[in-house]
Image (tube, rainbow, N blue to C red):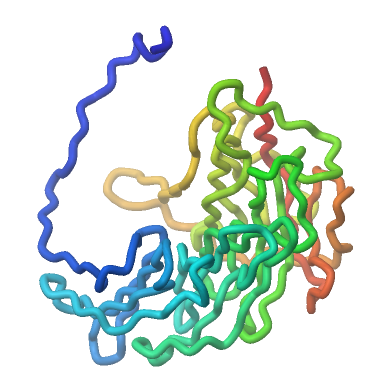
Length: 326
Protein backbone atom coordinates (compact mmCIF):
# COMPACT_ATOMS: atom_id res chain seq x y z
CA UNK A 1 0.00 0.00 0.00
CA UNK A 2 1.32 3.43 -0.92
CA UNK A 3 1.52 6.33 1.53
CA UNK A 4 -1.25 8.11 -0.39
CA UNK A 5 -3.52 5.07 -0.22
CA UNK A 6 -2.88 4.70 3.50
CA UNK A 7 -3.87 8.32 4.13
CA UNK A 8 -7.21 8.10 2.30
CA UNK A 9 -10.20 6.71 4.21
CA UNK A 10 -12.49 5.00 1.74
CA UNK A 11 -16.24 5.16 2.39
CA UNK A 12 -18.30 2.04 2.80
CA UNK A 13 -19.87 0.59 -0.34
CA UNK A 14 -23.62 1.11 -0.69
CA UNK A 15 -25.08 -1.66 -2.78
CA UNK A 16 -28.58 -0.22 -3.07
CA UNK A 17 -30.65 2.79 -2.07
CA UNK A 18 -34.34 3.23 -2.85
CA UNK A 19 -34.10 0.37 -5.34
CA UNK A 20 -35.94 -2.93 -5.43
CA UNK A 21 -35.37 -5.73 -7.92
CA UNK A 22 -38.69 -6.55 -9.55
CA UNK A 23 -37.62 -8.81 -12.42
CA UNK A 24 -34.73 -10.61 -14.03
CA UNK A 25 -34.22 -12.26 -17.40
CA UNK A 26 -31.46 -14.70 -18.35
CA UNK A 27 -31.64 -13.83 -22.09
CA UNK A 28 -31.67 -17.57 -22.69
CA UNK A 29 -28.09 -17.78 -21.52
CA UNK A 30 -26.66 -15.14 -23.90
CA UNK A 31 -23.63 -13.68 -22.10
CA UNK A 32 -22.90 -10.21 -20.81
CA UNK A 33 -25.02 -7.12 -21.49
CA UNK A 34 -24.97 -3.54 -20.25
CA UNK A 35 -22.67 -1.32 -22.37
CA UNK A 36 -25.50 -0.57 -24.78
CA UNK A 37 -29.20 -0.26 -23.94
CA UNK A 38 -32.07 1.70 -25.48
CA UNK A 39 -35.85 1.88 -25.08
CA UNK A 40 -38.44 2.38 -27.83
CA UNK A 41 -42.16 2.95 -27.22
CA UNK A 42 -44.30 1.55 -30.01
CA UNK A 43 -47.42 3.06 -31.49
CA UNK A 44 -49.60 0.67 -29.48
CA UNK A 45 -47.88 1.57 -26.20
CA UNK A 46 -45.47 -1.34 -25.85
CA UNK A 47 -42.01 -0.72 -24.43
CA UNK A 48 -39.22 -2.56 -26.21
CA UNK A 49 -35.73 -2.74 -24.74
CA UNK A 50 -32.72 -3.26 -27.01
CA UNK A 51 -29.58 -4.53 -25.29
CA UNK A 52 -26.16 -5.18 -26.79
CA UNK A 53 -24.51 -8.47 -25.88
CA UNK A 54 -20.80 -8.15 -25.14
CA UNK A 55 -19.91 -11.66 -26.24
CA UNK A 56 -20.95 -14.10 -28.99
CA UNK A 57 -22.94 -15.97 -30.08
CA UNK A 58 -25.55 -13.17 -29.66
CA UNK A 59 -24.96 -9.58 -30.82
CA UNK A 60 -28.23 -7.98 -29.62
CA UNK A 61 -31.32 -9.01 -27.67
CA UNK A 62 -34.78 -7.38 -27.84
CA UNK A 63 -37.19 -7.63 -24.93
CA UNK A 64 -40.75 -6.49 -24.33
CA UNK A 65 -40.67 -4.76 -20.94
CA UNK A 66 -44.14 -3.21 -21.07
CA UNK A 67 -44.79 -5.08 -17.82
CA UNK A 68 -41.52 -4.46 -15.98
CA UNK A 69 -42.25 -7.34 -13.62
CA UNK A 70 -42.48 -9.80 -16.52
CA UNK A 71 -39.92 -9.03 -19.27
CA UNK A 72 -40.35 -11.15 -22.40
CA UNK A 73 -37.56 -12.00 -24.83
CA UNK A 74 -38.77 -11.27 -28.37
CA UNK A 75 -35.77 -12.02 -30.55
CA UNK A 76 -31.97 -12.13 -30.66
CA UNK A 77 -29.59 -11.23 -33.48
CA UNK A 78 -26.63 -13.59 -33.86
CA UNK A 79 -23.00 -12.61 -34.30
CA UNK A 80 -21.44 -13.36 -37.67
CA UNK A 81 -18.84 -15.63 -36.04
CA UNK A 82 -17.25 -16.33 -32.66
CA UNK A 83 -14.59 -13.61 -33.01
CA UNK A 84 -16.99 -10.64 -33.27
CA UNK A 85 -19.26 -9.02 -30.68
CA UNK A 86 -22.05 -6.43 -30.57
CA UNK A 87 -20.93 -4.65 -27.36
CA UNK A 88 -22.65 -1.23 -27.84
CA UNK A 89 -25.79 0.24 -29.44
CA UNK A 90 -27.59 3.55 -29.84
CA UNK A 91 -31.12 4.52 -30.90
CA UNK A 92 -32.51 7.70 -32.48
CA UNK A 93 -36.03 7.60 -33.87
CA UNK A 94 -36.28 4.62 -36.20
CA UNK A 95 -32.51 4.16 -36.66
CA UNK A 96 -30.52 1.85 -34.41
CA UNK A 97 -26.72 1.53 -34.47
CA UNK A 98 -24.96 -1.67 -33.34
CA UNK A 99 -21.19 -1.75 -32.87
CA UNK A 100 -19.14 -4.59 -34.33
CA UNK A 101 -15.76 -5.26 -32.73
CA UNK A 102 -13.48 -8.21 -33.54
CA UNK A 103 -10.86 -9.95 -31.43
CA UNK A 104 -7.85 -9.26 -33.65
CA UNK A 105 -6.81 -6.49 -36.07
CA UNK A 106 -7.60 -7.16 -39.71
CA UNK A 107 -10.69 -9.28 -39.08
CA UNK A 108 -14.20 -8.46 -40.28
CA UNK A 109 -16.93 -7.33 -39.83
CA UNK A 110 -15.46 -4.36 -37.97
CA UNK A 111 -17.46 -1.11 -37.73
CA UNK A 112 -21.16 -0.70 -36.98
CA UNK A 113 -24.49 -1.85 -38.40
CA UNK A 114 -27.43 0.48 -39.09
CA UNK A 115 -30.93 -0.91 -38.62
CA UNK A 116 -34.37 0.40 -39.54
CA UNK A 117 -36.58 -0.26 -36.49
CA UNK A 118 -39.75 1.36 -37.79
CA UNK A 119 -41.16 -2.11 -37.14
CA UNK A 120 -39.63 -2.21 -33.66
CA UNK A 121 -39.56 -5.96 -33.07
CA UNK A 122 -38.23 -6.72 -36.58
CA UNK A 123 -35.02 -4.73 -37.11
CA UNK A 124 -33.93 -4.54 -40.74
CA UNK A 125 -30.27 -3.93 -41.55
CA UNK A 126 -30.01 -1.10 -44.08
CA UNK A 127 -26.37 -0.06 -43.86
CA UNK A 128 -22.91 -0.79 -42.50
CA UNK A 129 -19.98 1.50 -41.70
CA UNK A 130 -16.70 -0.30 -42.36
CA UNK A 131 -13.91 0.53 -39.89
CA UNK A 132 -11.78 -2.54 -40.56
CA UNK A 133 -8.07 -2.36 -41.26
CA UNK A 134 -4.67 -3.89 -40.55
CA UNK A 135 -4.47 -2.19 -37.14
CA UNK A 136 -8.21 -1.93 -36.36
CA UNK A 137 -10.53 -4.15 -34.36
CA UNK A 138 -13.52 -2.08 -35.40
CA UNK A 139 -15.92 0.03 -33.35
CA UNK A 140 -16.20 -0.30 -29.59
CA UNK A 141 -18.76 2.38 -28.65
CA UNK A 142 -21.52 4.14 -30.62
CA UNK A 143 -23.77 7.07 -29.67
CA UNK A 144 -26.13 9.47 -31.45
CA UNK A 145 -28.60 12.00 -30.08
CA UNK A 146 -30.03 13.36 -33.33
CA UNK A 147 -29.90 10.52 -35.84
CA UNK A 148 -27.68 12.61 -38.13
CA UNK A 149 -24.24 12.13 -36.60
CA UNK A 150 -22.80 9.10 -34.85
CA UNK A 151 -20.06 9.66 -32.27
CA UNK A 152 -17.92 6.55 -32.03
CA UNK A 153 -14.73 5.12 -30.54
CA UNK A 154 -13.10 3.15 -33.30
CA UNK A 155 -10.11 2.15 -35.36
CA UNK A 156 -9.78 2.70 -39.11
CA UNK A 157 -7.96 1.36 -42.13
CA UNK A 158 -5.57 4.34 -42.23
CA UNK A 159 -4.87 4.61 -38.49
CA UNK A 160 -1.77 2.95 -37.01
CA UNK A 161 -1.14 3.64 -33.30
CA UNK A 162 2.32 4.15 -31.86
CA UNK A 163 1.44 1.63 -29.17
CA UNK A 164 -0.77 -1.34 -30.09
CA UNK A 165 -2.87 -0.73 -26.96
CA UNK A 166 -3.93 2.72 -28.20
CA UNK A 167 -5.95 1.55 -31.21
CA UNK A 168 -9.18 3.58 -30.71
CA UNK A 169 -9.81 7.25 -31.45
CA UNK A 170 -12.84 9.56 -31.77
CA UNK A 171 -14.72 9.77 -35.06
CA UNK A 172 -17.89 11.53 -36.28
CA UNK A 173 -19.88 9.65 -38.91
CA UNK A 174 -22.70 11.16 -40.97
CA UNK A 175 -25.66 8.75 -40.77
CA UNK A 176 -28.31 11.06 -42.28
CA UNK A 177 -28.54 8.51 -45.08
CA UNK A 178 -28.41 5.20 -43.16
CA UNK A 179 -27.67 3.31 -46.35
CA UNK A 180 -24.46 5.30 -46.98
CA UNK A 181 -22.76 6.31 -43.69
CA UNK A 182 -19.47 8.17 -44.10
CA UNK A 183 -16.82 9.76 -41.92
CA UNK A 184 -16.78 13.53 -41.59
CA UNK A 185 -14.32 14.18 -38.76
CA UNK A 186 -11.90 12.61 -36.29
CA UNK A 187 -9.62 13.44 -33.35
CA UNK A 188 -6.96 11.51 -31.50
CA UNK A 189 -4.66 12.23 -28.60
CA UNK A 190 -1.47 13.93 -29.81
CA UNK A 191 1.26 11.31 -29.90
CA UNK A 192 -1.19 8.44 -30.26
CA UNK A 193 -0.73 7.88 -34.00
CA UNK A 194 2.35 6.86 -35.96
CA UNK A 195 3.90 9.97 -37.46
CA UNK A 196 2.86 12.33 -34.64
CA UNK A 197 5.62 14.62 -33.39
CA UNK A 198 4.18 14.65 -29.86
CA UNK A 199 5.05 12.00 -27.30
CA UNK A 200 2.77 10.37 -24.72
CA UNK A 201 4.48 9.79 -21.39
CA UNK A 202 3.03 6.53 -20.14
CA UNK A 203 2.22 5.85 -16.51
CA UNK A 204 4.97 4.14 -14.58
CA UNK A 205 2.96 1.61 -12.55
CA UNK A 206 -0.47 1.35 -14.19
CA UNK A 207 -0.47 1.53 -17.97
CA UNK A 208 -3.75 0.31 -19.44
CA UNK A 209 -4.15 2.36 -22.63
CA UNK A 210 -4.31 5.88 -24.07
CA UNK A 211 -7.37 5.36 -26.25
CA UNK A 212 -10.92 6.69 -26.23
CA UNK A 213 -13.66 4.52 -24.79
CA UNK A 214 -16.78 6.66 -24.33
CA UNK A 215 -17.84 9.30 -26.90
CA UNK A 216 -20.88 11.49 -26.25
CA UNK A 217 -22.49 14.69 -27.49
CA UNK A 218 -25.72 16.03 -26.00
CA UNK A 219 -28.69 17.93 -27.47
CA UNK A 220 -28.12 20.71 -24.90
CA UNK A 221 -24.56 21.16 -26.25
CA UNK A 222 -24.34 19.82 -29.81
CA UNK A 223 -21.13 21.82 -30.25
CA UNK A 224 -19.29 19.73 -27.63
CA UNK A 225 -17.98 16.18 -27.52
CA UNK A 226 -17.19 14.53 -24.18
CA UNK A 227 -14.65 11.72 -24.30
CA UNK A 228 -13.48 9.22 -21.69
CA UNK A 229 -9.89 8.54 -22.75
CA UNK A 230 -8.99 5.77 -20.25
CA UNK A 231 -5.43 6.64 -19.05
CA UNK A 232 -5.74 9.98 -20.85
CA UNK A 233 -8.49 11.29 -18.55
CA UNK A 234 -11.46 13.35 -19.79
CA UNK A 235 -11.26 15.26 -23.07
CA UNK A 236 -13.79 17.93 -24.12
CA UNK A 237 -13.79 19.00 -27.75
CA UNK A 238 -15.38 21.87 -29.67
CA UNK A 239 -17.01 20.27 -32.72
CA UNK A 240 -18.89 23.36 -33.98
CA UNK A 241 -16.51 26.08 -35.19
CA UNK A 242 -13.66 25.15 -37.56
CA UNK A 243 -11.64 28.15 -36.32
CA UNK A 244 -12.19 27.56 -32.61
CA UNK A 245 -9.12 26.28 -30.81
CA UNK A 246 -9.93 27.54 -27.34
CA UNK A 247 -9.90 25.21 -24.39
CA UNK A 248 -13.33 24.64 -22.90
CA UNK A 249 -11.86 23.34 -19.65
CA UNK A 250 -8.86 24.87 -17.89
CA UNK A 251 -5.58 22.92 -18.04
CA UNK A 252 -5.42 20.27 -15.35
CA UNK A 253 -9.18 20.21 -14.72
CA UNK A 254 -9.41 16.59 -15.86
CA UNK A 255 -5.81 15.38 -16.02
CA UNK A 256 -4.50 12.12 -17.32
CA UNK A 257 -4.59 9.57 -14.55
CA UNK A 258 -3.18 6.17 -13.70
CA UNK A 259 -6.62 4.55 -13.80
CA UNK A 260 -9.43 3.96 -16.24
CA UNK A 261 -11.57 6.92 -17.37
CA UNK A 262 -14.25 4.98 -19.17
CA UNK A 263 -17.50 7.01 -19.22
CA UNK A 264 -18.48 10.67 -19.06
CA UNK A 265 -21.79 12.18 -18.01
CA UNK A 266 -23.01 15.73 -18.58
CA UNK A 267 -25.93 17.22 -16.64
CA UNK A 268 -27.73 20.53 -17.27
CA UNK A 269 -26.75 23.07 -14.63
CA UNK A 270 -29.44 23.48 -12.00
CA UNK A 271 -30.68 26.60 -10.26
CA UNK A 272 -32.99 25.77 -7.39
CA UNK A 273 -35.44 23.15 -8.58
CA UNK A 274 -35.45 24.01 -12.27
CA UNK A 275 -32.88 23.28 -14.95
CA UNK A 276 -31.22 26.08 -16.82
CA UNK A 277 -32.85 26.65 -20.18
CA UNK A 278 -30.74 24.76 -22.73
CA UNK A 279 -28.99 26.67 -25.45
CA UNK A 280 -30.68 26.56 -28.87
CA UNK A 281 -29.63 23.42 -30.72
CA UNK A 282 -27.01 23.99 -33.36
CA UNK A 283 -25.76 21.55 -35.91
CA UNK A 284 -21.99 21.04 -36.08
CA UNK A 285 -20.58 23.56 -38.49
CA UNK A 286 -19.23 22.16 -41.73
CA UNK A 287 -16.35 23.30 -43.84
CA UNK A 288 -14.49 21.89 -46.80
CA UNK A 289 -11.18 20.56 -45.51
CA UNK A 290 -8.65 18.18 -46.88
CA UNK A 291 -8.42 14.54 -45.87
CA UNK A 292 -6.61 13.75 -42.64
CA UNK A 293 -3.22 12.11 -43.08
CA UNK A 294 -0.73 10.43 -40.83
CA UNK A 295 1.38 13.57 -40.70
CA UNK A 296 -1.51 15.96 -40.07
CA UNK A 297 -1.01 18.69 -37.49
CA UNK A 298 -2.38 17.65 -34.12
CA UNK A 299 -3.80 21.15 -33.59
CA UNK A 300 -6.57 20.44 -36.09
CA UNK A 301 -7.59 16.84 -36.74
CA UNK A 302 -10.45 16.87 -39.23
CA UNK A 303 -11.42 15.54 -42.59
CA UNK A 304 -12.88 12.46 -44.26
CA UNK A 305 -10.86 9.38 -45.00
CA UNK A 306 -10.15 8.21 -48.51
CA UNK A 307 -13.28 6.96 -50.16
CA UNK A 308 -15.57 9.28 -48.21
CA UNK A 309 -18.61 10.40 -50.12
CA UNK A 310 -18.61 13.92 -48.72
CA UNK A 311 -16.07 16.74 -48.43
CA UNK A 312 -18.11 18.68 -45.85
CA UNK A 313 -16.58 18.22 -42.44
CA UNK A 314 -17.74 19.13 -38.91
CA UNK A 315 -14.53 20.60 -37.53
CA UNK A 316 -12.99 19.09 -34.42
CA UNK A 317 -10.57 21.47 -32.74
CA UNK A 318 -8.11 20.23 -30.18
CA UNK A 319 -9.27 21.81 -26.94
CA UNK A 320 -7.53 19.60 -24.42
CA UNK A 321 -4.11 17.99 -24.52
CA UNK A 322 -4.10 15.14 -22.06
CA UNK A 323 -0.55 13.90 -22.47
CA UNK A 324 0.93 13.19 -19.06
CA UNK A 325 3.36 15.78 -17.76
CA UNK A 326 5.72 14.76 -14.99
